[in-house]
Length: 286
Length: 170
Length: 170
Image (cartoon, rainbow over all chains, first blue to last red; front, side, top):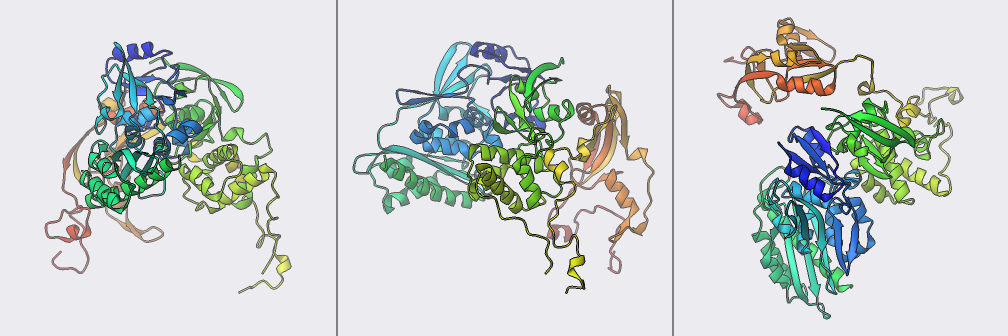
């Protein structure tokens, strides 16, 4: 196995393009090294992106946030501006692993590892986050929901990698929330994850919404009917009931030791309600 | 495959070593630098026995390639005491009996030190959640938390904890 | 009930002593088994069965033995075939034949993870590579993981020479 730590995006792209055998990108390493140690993956080349300028760090551009792909969860959690604007995005990332894992784990790793249960993905989708992808032909952008195509699979070409995430400028009175259910208290894989992002008008009526569920299908699910249940409502009981039903209907989960299909489906409805309540409350307070 | 030459700072001292691409920071600390205080409990980032800090950030050294350490400052359990003078956390662990077999202890101490540096006045809940990545099979955690909160209080200069019980017989 | 006539004679009971190995454990100085390092020491690694129940048809260790750095490769063929003999070994009876088979499988593997071969090499990486190079041919047999299934007629038998005394038919 070879390890390289390119100093520029172009060097990294060249390393990926020129690799014979399996090349893996390394950001935080909290998925890659586990897979290497268990023998699940045996890369011929590891490309460490952390020394490339811009891959780590958070900056604001006219209210929009640009997050370096390899920025750790711990750094995200220390950024007051980001937490204020996108509490759901940050709390999704913060649920991953332990304090130690947070010290290294990144949004790009969580996204590109492409676990159906990835905790940072649903809220990134509801945030309308865009990935900036570098490749041999330069940069391109893609909505974050187009990246994971199935468990362990992404739409990225082998000589491409994500350099940053862009979160759009928020309209006023809008907020997000992410909740997940796990059997333990910490350190577990989501049985269900639910992200809700809403915008309210001055009277508290929802004008715009997105609801995304994680861990209930091979990739995160955008539940359009759930969003429709919220728009035009003040999150009254009728809206909550429609939201719950829409969330449940969108689930295509698996049976495993963490939960049966019936259980995951029921919890999806519950978490969608709770996440919506938190998002509404946060948005209304702005 | 040729080894990589790495220069880093370990416990405040310059360190350099050769490593293979697949070797982890934990491997190198233990096998090259003789710092066997950090332990390998799981190789999957779940148990925290390998906890160290990199540039002040708490991490699992089993999930860091040794090559990634280039240019960074690593702190391990071996850097906690100052010569023979124990860190307050180490003293409180001893006083409270917050260890039995001792295998998880270095990781817990490194993690707890990081907790207090980031949150000098943690609540019990904050301490428990921060330390969720450090597993202990022996103690049941209660005495660990008591030791951590006591050490945090001492380091804040708060009133010292009540003197431990004098020898007494019922 | 207190059998001590003079409590003032108690020197340790009723006190809170710091455990004698505590300082070593909280500083990371305490040496656990995996922390031992000696010049020229070898590292062992074990080849384990991926099957819950299988007959071992053949084990080819030639590629492992030929790997530079490998100093020994063993299978059950390198050990005496311990015959059936029951003995009380402390907490209850054991059969030495079963005990020895559990150390290293002979003829059959009885659980996923059952050791079938082992290597000693000059580094952990070489030992791990050598284990991968050992080729084992198995005839996979059915297994059960449920008590009811195990009691059913025709359930797979692990030992064709083990019978419950006093039960007919055998």
